[in-house]
Image (cartoon, rainbow, N blue to C red; front, side, top):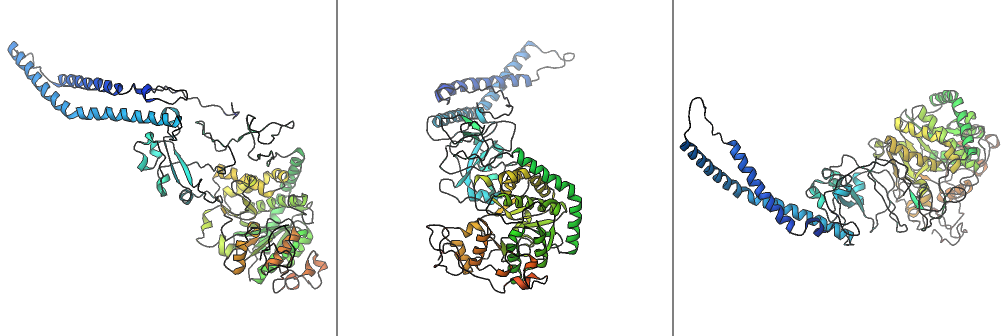
Length: 631
């Protein structure tokens, strides 16, 4: 028995269909007693019909007269009786002639239908390959099915997730319909007698669906996977079972076919790696302490922010703020963002930098940006750059990113959050998210595709370093819930993993409308495109074929590599004298870093021949052993 932990919905059903065979499949001979059944049915049906007709006619003949005025003689009674018999015979012959053929047809159709259903069920049970619904078994859940091309379905229903490419053996969506009226109109006649799965197209697929539940299913060939659809009190979450042993620590080991099925987390891999561990006591206490500081300082912080927004910046269209978070260790990347934007003539007056130290706040202001150092919440965050993805400094900055967007949402603004390792090629608000009649207008939240379509980020693979959120009740709940789940961020060392987990629940619970711009689209490229083995995207980018909105240097180990990649890309503008320097250490700054630190032209430099570059770097070494030169 699978420990699903839910109360069963008991439904008692008295079946009128006999069953036989070892596999429980119905046999035609058992069900109907061959053709004798049809013959007997007709023998019973026709006399019954005639008897009912005769009785009805007798009941309808008025043979009485008013007894107080007329006396009927015996001869008259004989005449009347004979006349009645003659009328009955004429009526009986007429009715019999008219309806005998109809009775035969009805009985024959019923017999043929029952026989066909039993034969189809027998074939399915005996390996004939035909799928059949038995209404006595699952008629309460399903009455029919169809398939439709995946591209057809996803054109009709926008799932918001980055879709996998269509493959030959997984090119269609399987549709299950709960009742005949839910099926496409063209399939409703004889729906319960289906022996083959028909294909439907266009809006016909869902034309009669008042409700639609969508299940995204792994379609690789590496799993012995089963799906169980249980008639039960409806749920909106999957229960995931796997044949995995229990370890001494109470966790599960790797996939072992000899083990019983056990309820496991969705993050348990076949190798026994657990991607989702509940926060430890230490992590939980750290999160509680951070939240305590946040709520204790909320009134003061919001007052400060209101003043900065009013006096030091210009929200785009008076309602959108571009939010960035930076510490001193990442300040060169912030500086490069501004230098690059200024070189292209972009307005950055709607940017608000949440600095996690005073040095970064000073640099940001000297670059012409609005900046706020929230000492209450960020005072304990290290000023140094993270050494690598997921280290302590990295995790601290991830929590800061949660806090800042919640504050802006709390103030009622739409916001675009972006990391500092981004450069613009078009203005992301003017030319994209805030553009009139843009496709993104119908969504609550739009994300760049991270590109790593792994179980950690399933099913959205949303990148937490570049996303746009429109302020409303649904998005307010999203960012509030993300903040309250800070322990998840600390435990997983990933802002992104926690964010996608919260997205999943908010979409289900409140209907949050989410869209992830697919990695194969050209608008929002990043580390996935940079690291493609073929180099196809980046070569098209350098040739001018691609016209992206931004480029996000994600999927990169640390800040040093990001700088080198931007230099090879032809998107680095920061002079060496300003790198890793506080404002009082930069000679000639005089409060204006743009003129002092920003080069007029990109500062190109080769580093690695196997990474993309705007000019060939064939004489440079590899960074990844054995990888061919990009050019």
